[in-house]
Image (cartoon, rainbow, N blue to C red; front, side):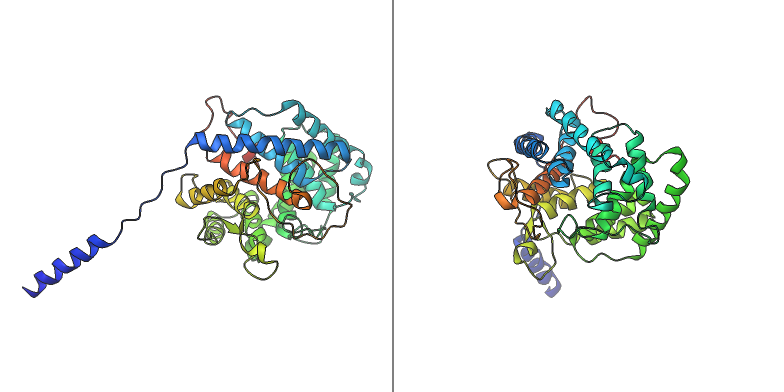
Length: 353
């Protein structure tokens, strides 16, 4: 009799506990609308940079081109004419310094610049040529005494992490190394793999690009899964990720589109996370909630400027450069969650490695 009463009481208590159900995946229509709104300001900022500068800008060109190519792979219209202009601009920028690359000198930004330029060209499906061969020659010489490529700039979050520099350098090499460079590339890739496996990440940027690097370098699935879990576990209650785990500036310890966009892209492309996974969908919903009416995501800069400020036409004033980068990553993350276009190519340009 006592047992019967106990079981009845437990049943009543359980009936009062709310059932938590995962929200349904965000509809394609909503995702497409958000990405389409982002393409116009991203393209405008890229044009503004091209018209006012002669150097590469990872935030104004790399991330916008990444977002453009991902969007096109899902059936959205992009400005193909401007894409062509951007790729030629970057190729010309490298070709002006071809001799310096062949001599192992590189140019301002060193491995950061070389890797970023090659990755951007790869995203835009640029064909290998004598200039890209000169840049890969340089990358094989740069930091040859180390197991990784050293970050040359200190402009956090996107520049300053050895993991980020190592990833873009290795990816640039993987995309454009020549037949004659294959053996040297494989040796370098193995060195990088060993370094990535044994070296721990210290912050969000490290965690994102360590995961991307481990996948690219061919690490064991177990190691990649551990790195993906470490990154996923840092998701905050609001669905986003923060650049820093603590400290100053305080804004960098709160969720933002840069940290969230990079996390989602890395978790999907390198960590194998399905875009309908609840972790991914929570990130998607965070991005949709925080997108501005102008189609962009605003992220406060924590980088100390060392170049004269100029306007590209992208919103957010002195925060425009990190905000452009954040918008490119966020748009790409949303695009990856869309259903593939019917005539989509066998491999998204956004996922090429």
